[in-house]
Image (cartoon, helix red, strand yellow):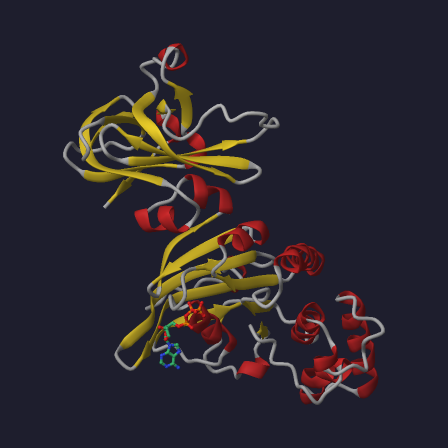
Length: 375
Ligand code: ATP
């Protein structure tokens, strides 16, 4: 029998081994996840990985083929979509074109049978909340993209759901507006103390807004972590490659000393990695290191100084330099044939390029900054 867990010990939302098939295709694959009250959670993943399907199951627009969804400790399977304390804001906003801003926001309240005076008060609050004052009588086609987004947000918040689901809420906005709207969404979520679950394929957006991120791939969660842990301690090659840029060296464990693993890389080198986990020799792994953790020194006295046992050093030649404003990215072809990228912050104004294509350099990095990923 299933042990009975008191509702107060459960998270607000518990997804338990949920799957969804479309014909023979499995869009969501035995996925389990807990989300707490007041969290801003992001589901991040490539197109088609099942993010929207998962949201639609939470909203009640799709029925799971297996597993359960508990909200406040109760299985919500029998609860109809509009009766769930869950609301969804759609990617295309799905506003009624023939209704005014006011009536769009009031729509769900009317359908829920709220009294007229209460509706007026609530819609007024929502208009103020998303700063649409003065635009109440306009139709959606008389609004800018950003204003339409606010109407959709107000409408989805009007019934004060416990959980708000946002499917690519900022996709239709340009970069500047997207950034300011991100800040507004975060403020709103904090002020309301509501649980927000946002679907996005934009990692920067997920990292900016969410306190935790679930990375999805092919219907499964690859990793659930804070933005910082996701970036600093990815658990798989896939996550490491999906979130930010990263250098990967394939190899196998050569030896394990105290808190340090030596990896024999496929290109014939040795990379030392600080790794408290005991690792068996010959285990096939990849060493992952972020470009900004790889430093460069010109070959000569400068690089001779980088000679400590505690540092990995690889010789090579710069083949590409990309100036990106805040940082410069260098591509280095190592003597072993592998390619490594180094990103350096432009903390002072660059009067002259000190490093340029064709120069011989030493790329060096600390074992502490490497992550070992098992196959
Ligand atoms: P995107 O970021 O592109 O919206 P997503 O991660 O949200 O992608 P889903 O919309 O959840 O992905 O779709 C997951 C997979 O399930 C896709 O391969 C999609 O083609 C498929 N799928 C979704 N809905 C249906 C459906 N009603 N019938 C058949 N296949 C579907």
